[in-house]
Amino acid sequence: MRLPLIAGNWKMNTTVDEGVSLVTRMRPLLDKINGVEKLVCPPFVSLVAVRDTLAGSTVKTGAQNMYFEEKGAYTGEISPLMLAGLCEYAIIGHSERRQYFQEAGEMINRKVKAALKAGLKPILCVGERLEENEAGKTAEVVTGHLKSALVDIKSPDGLVIAYEPVWAIGTGKAATGKQSNETIGLIRETAGKLIDKATARDMRILYGGSVTAENIAEFVSQPEIDGGLVGGASLKADQFVAIVQKTKEVKGRI
Ligand code: PGA
Image (cartoon, rainbow, N blue to C red; front, side, top):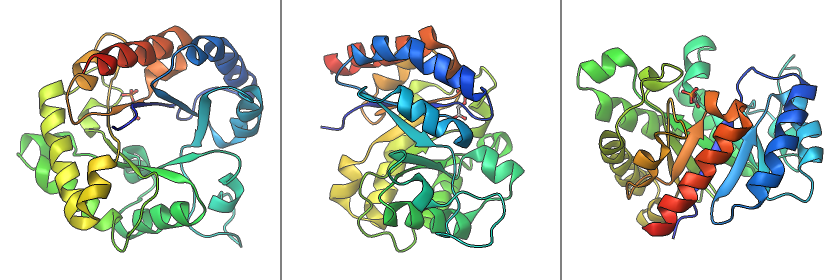
């Protein structure tokens, strides 16, 4: 049994005070919902304050990115050792990092390895762009992302994969549950070949891209989809709580 996971990716939104206020409002409501793992990924500068606000709560924290080196002259970067102990997860290879910060193959692989080494659970993002989708290249792109990101990864404790079609992110144009289930099935099969079958069977794979309280049921009712990586809707307490609640209701039934 894979425990469903709903992860909120706040991206470059919220000041420290706004982040604290957001989790202060969500916390009592989210703590009432069991059977779903709940995660918020605030900006780096808010991680400590958000973690402290969530002390004793079932809501976990994660980072949106990290560098692969442990320390040194890398001005402006955050190391896995700084995050370990502060949060449990780190999103790696998000399409916005690929698009705006030139992250790709080897760098993403090094980040996944560094996160695992530091005891952080990576949420590795993969997904095709619109033109790739329209050219029928979804399977090729997604398996390519996995092949390069998972080089030499043997026992990825806690590794989560998020399938995020780039054309669905922030556009209000979500993929369909059926399409995503097929692609996520392919991701699981590919991870099985690259790592091993048992690991792939037990690994959580999320859908991300314009997830809302209205459409989450369509995704989590699919057998391969274990939850969501939620951007815009994770910044609204009532929406995020409703997404977690719906996930519990749907996954509780199947
Ligand atoms: P969105 O973002 O829910 O705002 O589309 C998802 C993501 O990029 O993780």
